[in-house]
Length: 463
Image (cartoon, rainbow, N blue to C red; front, side, top):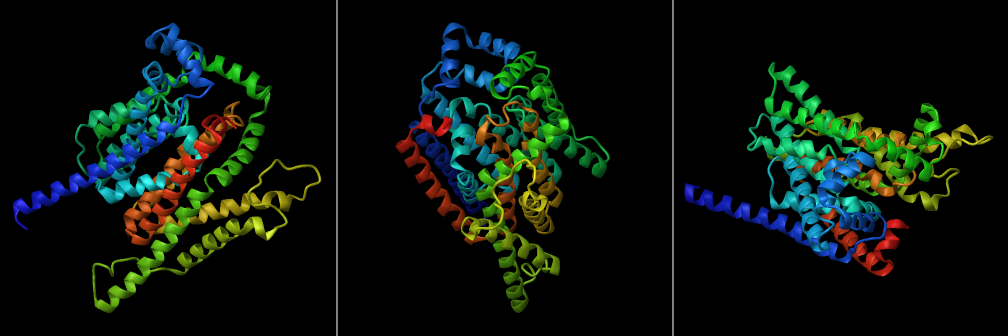
């Protein structure tokens, strides 16, 4: 292939990738026209911003309510304008998130990887989608900061791979702004930045300036959020409204009730995404084993490099598949205890009956993570993503709105799982998984649209 032909191929590839990103933006933009401003925060922000300018409003919010400076700025400069302005930028941020996940997981952004990640995003539970991505007040707090946070992760990913990253300052700015969104995002950005910085220092015996700047920016952003004078006032107000006497609960009680809450949220809102990740992993691993046999028969050394399955691999796959079948069939099996109901241990209740769902889900998720660590290239990245997904939910243990926030509290955890799913597809490139993710994604998009049109946006988000 000569130089002219190579340039033609590269130009065609860029056009396809750009077209795929535009499809993501346009689809999101079009769907968002079904969503109108809701009563509650949307209406409240609009009333307040008619009385003061955006800068005054952000300062007022920081002093009296929230340290989510980036989210407040985003609201201040979109709410006063027609809803279409927010729709435009909201679709842009979702497209940025899709691009960033594809860039981190697939190394190179192509049309197929972009569409795969966008389809995977639509595997989220409809309630999570609406509350975090298609509600103005929710999107600026969850989707927008998360998009910037994941975008900043490109700098870390490139540094680990030994690749040079252009325009490093953009990623550093993204880390700073993303850390001032929902409280679950900042700690994740800081943790990943510091761990990457330490890892590279141990490996290279020098400080990576770009990663160090990313870490410093995210730490500064997190500090600005944490020292917010309005946070205490907000906590008092929300405790009084949502969870009276929450501040008087012992730390152990908060953690205990938080664990119970988190298991229930994961089972109810993340089961579909975890189930699909399990299926994608097992199908891809088994298919790679089949390719290995074919490579051996044809003496194809490139395919023969696939790792041979060990007895432990078969055992792990058997456990996760068996448990997944039990979870899927649980409503019709009439077990002695539900696998989807988690509660505080009651007096006289058998400990085994109460504890079984917790043990079952712990084993299921742990075996899945270990299985992925054994096959994916960056096994410790998988572990960190899984732990970050867990810790993102744990932040809610110490919030009086733990029972009021709803499905969106699982949004950050869901995004981290999507990254893991994208890493699986990047490793195995299984065509069956490409097809399998698009079918439920399209069905979920259709269901999402029709249910909003049928029951109404307000019922959906506040019901």
